[in-house]
Image (cartoon, rainbow, N blue to C red):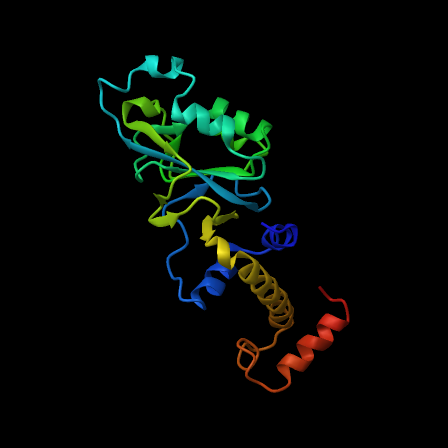
Amino acid sequence: MKATTRDQLALVSTATLCTALFKRGLRHQFLQNVHPLNATLPNMVGEAFTLRYIPAREDLNTLSVFQDRAHPQRVAVETCPSGAVLVIDSRQDARAASAGSILVSRLMKRGAAGIVTDGGFRDSPAIAALPFPSYHQRPSAPTNLTLHQAIDINVPIGCGDVAVFPGDVVVGDGEGVIVIPAHLADDVAAEATAMTEFEDFVTERVMAGQSIVGLYPPTDPETLPAFEAWRQGGRR
């Protein structure tokens, strides 16, 4: 991802990104039932690095599996690139945890940009206190071994009813998480930045008492010139 693209995505909302993707025919890129543990943190932006769980089988998923240094969950945490977002396919099942505070802390210390699961995290109060963007369905105390078996790293997955391919661009804010196909990221980031600037102008006008008719969308002929004058005046 280009540095300018990352910087632009850090300042736009998932709502605006949804609209920019909708214009390109993509209607379902916002993860369903995935929420921030701390909605006050800055935007999460990074390329997807994925981990896939399948249903656990009792004879294969005992506590002893964590003694294996090649266990996929542990390997994912230790190999997720700096600046990437670890996205976990937990089959939308939060009855057992996708990870806990120690693994999330390790990701943070390794320089990851965030973590996302469509399941749940254990130790969620401790994770919420970290300065690290983390998104899940809901808290879940049981270990992942009781329900999930880590099976694949950095393969295409489903998370929150959205297809996530390694390298896709993942953005999270106080509302949730959206996935931008990698080949669209630069254009979508630029358009969302322009949309945000115009909406800042509109918001200022609305708060001053102006009607949205002719303003939003800008169907009155004087709206766009007024916006350009606002921009040139350094109001943003």
